[in-house]
Length: 261
Image 1: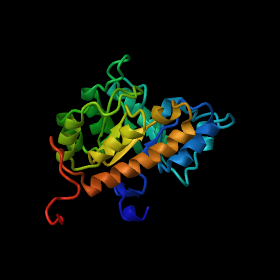
Image 2 (image 1 turned 60 degrees about the vertical axis):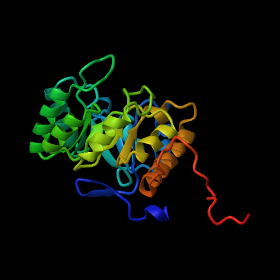
Image 3 (image 1 turned 180 degrees about the vertical axis):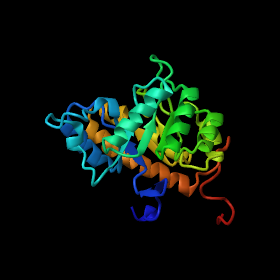
């Protein structure tokens, strides 16, 4: 879009036109996933390292349906419950040639899938020292967001709501505080259920939105992929434009001053 011609999401010196990051899980088929990725306009695709067959090249893999010349891979450490697990998984992804980028997840509770922030911070420190570009998934906690930045995270990814819940942005006020203190991109990760959720997140001023279930779990994933693309663009434009202040009472669209009686 011409209005956003020079507007990029920049992560560790890499520039991306799209501010939408998409996942690979829960699709009915790899072909549907591929088509959804194309319709979303995304340039970054995240995939769970533990769900990808990295050893047997003779079997079909989701990697066969992701054009790495077109998309930047963002391996994630989904399913890890300790810092050590997450670090080993990130190392496996890099040694397999996937990427030195990593969406770092260290889960603290199996039911809610909320992050274990202590383990997350420890894993971030280790991986940054090892040269990884780390994008940690965390709670919408301004203090932890600040600590992760100080630990060298290339971006911070606070949740909008629990993973896969589709509840939307539950705490916009915490996100605003995180944004006020941000020195790296802030990308909302988890909880987006429909296009309006993505637009709301972008209108707050976040740098991007990551989603998987919101698209893959829709009744018509391909339509939702297109809807999410447009929502992220609309939300970004609205943020850059600046909304009008909220008021309790009406203000006439056509002022009375200067009217002919």
